[in-house]
Picture (cartoon, rainbow, N blue to C red):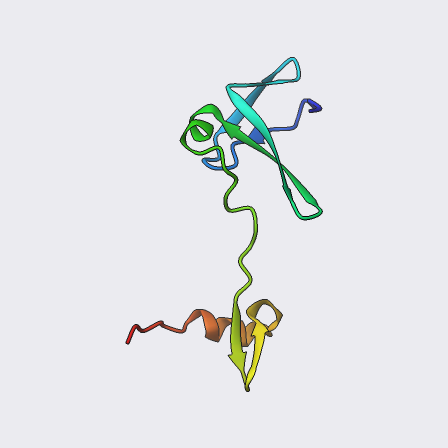
Length: 93
């Protein structure tokens, strides 16, 4: 891990700033995860790693909804339709 003077590292889970001394992480872990062909490098502070060494919240969830009979990702909708979607309320029957 390169240590540039202006680079600041943060814990993936809690956002706490990670200290680097002589190119080494202090009280933190560098974790490497593979997902298919992609590789993720994540830094976790010691406290968060002890709570859970697993990687979470590294992907955006793609939300689909029905428009005129077709299921489409909400991210592909125009801005007005996305705003209308965000104002919808869910009901349990």
